[in-house]
Length: 166
Image 1: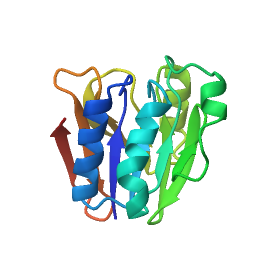
Image 2 (image 1 turned 90 degrees about the vertical axis):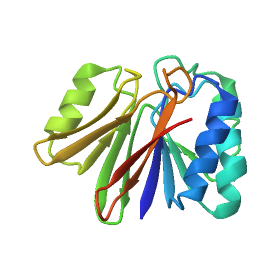
Image 3 (image 1 turned 180 degrees about the horizontal axis):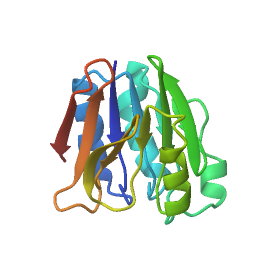
């Protein structure tokens, strides 16, 4: 299974739409948004492309996401699972943690816990793919305020990671 990874869209709908189309074409089985979403319209844009294909979207909040009524009333039937500030998902036998990583202590503790095969994060707007002990840490950069905007697709079976400028 392939997974799509994006972060830091900051409300950039054209970049979000581009990333969603790329992930659909890459035939991902799930998409992870690592925070700083920038509003419900971003998740609605992802869902518009991915929900008809039955591709679930898992999202965490970043430090600039307002915890307002906007999030409370986001529809629960569009294939988007809002995980709060931290999430855990298991796919294809891989234990995945997802967080924004603005809380450096929580990020470090998550990585050092050894509980996760993958830790997906955002915040820095910098692409990275690092192995720390048994844990692979991936930051897809920024899909909304990057230079250039970026996202990633990871093949969970082969470990191949592809980057896309959106």
